[in-house]
Image (cartoon, rainbow, N blue to C red; front, side, top):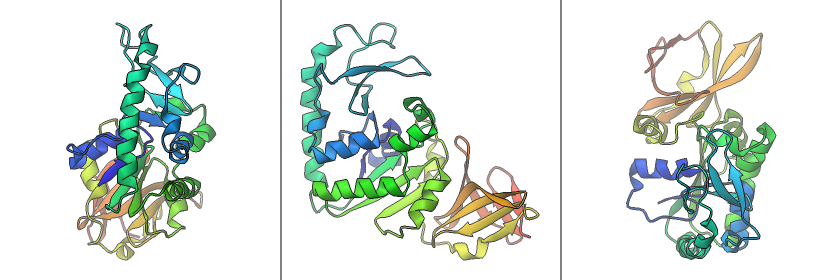
Length: 296
């Protein structure tokens, strides 16, 4: 069972697209959740999710001008009524606080019971939603709020353990290749970490099938090496994932990833929705967008 821990609505949309529509809703499904808010919710056993006028502030997105409520680093976008322009909050939105508190109390009780049960589960976090940047001031702020590198894994896993979560694994989907490199060094069997670049809010099911197909059938050792007249370098970081580097003046710059996927290879590159099928064609790699790299 996949359970969203954030960082955005996209995580829940991915779960639904992958066949989890019948799964019951959880507290972090449809909001923007910073790492601080997630860890605080676990440490307070959900008490930090409680809404009151003194804690609630209005947040306005820079792109759409959409208004929402922010409490302790958690942004609620679908819980309060909007005005006729569908951007501003209705002037009487505070009247809905009791209803919202009742909702999140019930969702947290469901989440806590499942997290602490012996049922096998995977906690799923993504930072790949294409417009998530508007909730951060700059790159450093984004990494502190939504980063999924080594520090994030350690902090979130520690909070889950202290909360009493049992029989769980974690899945990260990152926009950053560096984050995947960091966590690969941990060699922790609890974490399945993949790179996709930025993805649309509701990703193409074909992209998701490439990213999350079975990873047990292809050996990556045979595809490692240099390609494209030494312009590309493929280097394994685990038995199921490799980093693609582009060479610039002798320097290796992270460019994408390759992962074993259902007997094929999934290639993900920087940019938005840049995930393709790759095939080892013997003389090189052939990608489903028509690009081919010849082996050096």
